Image 1 (cartoon, rainbow, N blue to C red):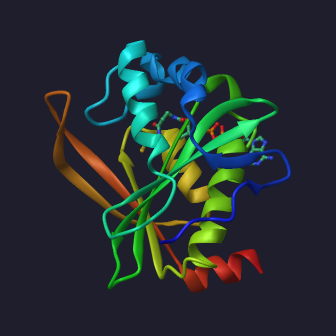
Image 2 (image 1 turned 30 degrees about the vertical axis):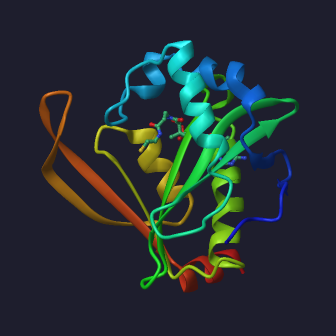
Image 3 (image 1 turned 90 degrees about the vertical axis):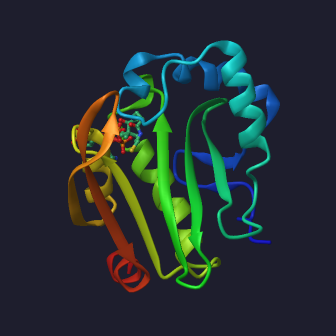
Length: 186
Ligand SMILES: CC(C)(COP(=O)(O)OP(=O)(O)OC[C@H]1O[C@@H](n2cnc3c(N)ncnc32)[C@H](O)[C@@H]1OP(=O)(O)O)[C@@H](O)C(=O)NCCC(=O)NCCS
């Protein structure tokens, strides 16, 4: 079982597993159309749907097997302002996929970058990954800028590769390797 030493702390943030009491904070962003605008299969959620989402995220506190998702609640002051997550895509290839969602009230200050950096430090350090990738709808410019800010290289633009709300959509793929992460951080 692989798990960061909780809590992870950065200059402005605390990262820890989700707890059921985080529902109000999670619902505050999951209910917003602007937050889910570019996310596949996600519409604004009802409070009951957010409750189910929180219950699922509470269990995502460790990577036990390939395919598992690790979700960390990102806390600024006393509120959960977003999540960063890592899906363990391949044990043999030491590869995972990064994801993130933040409340727009806390955007534009580099907090998502700071939280993702802390998770990637753990992922390439203690967890020992070789490669982390992330994907987004080509229209999700904030997400693409975040990946670039993290030092991820754009590897692909898969043209009309998936159906998004009934329309063919392009998907951007970004990635970073362990040696690239270390040299950028060092
Ligand atoms: C993707 C998402 C997390 C990006 O949020 P964000 O606020 O742009 O990212 P950050 O918190 O890292 O802030 C970076 C911004 O703050 C600015 N900034 C200010 N202070 C900063 C600092 N100390 N460090 C870094 N950036 C800083 C940056 O210039 C940047 O602005 P820009 O993109 O206009 O150049 C957010 O848009 C989101 O949650 N979207 C909805 C969910 C979603 O689509 N998730 C991805 C699915 S693929």
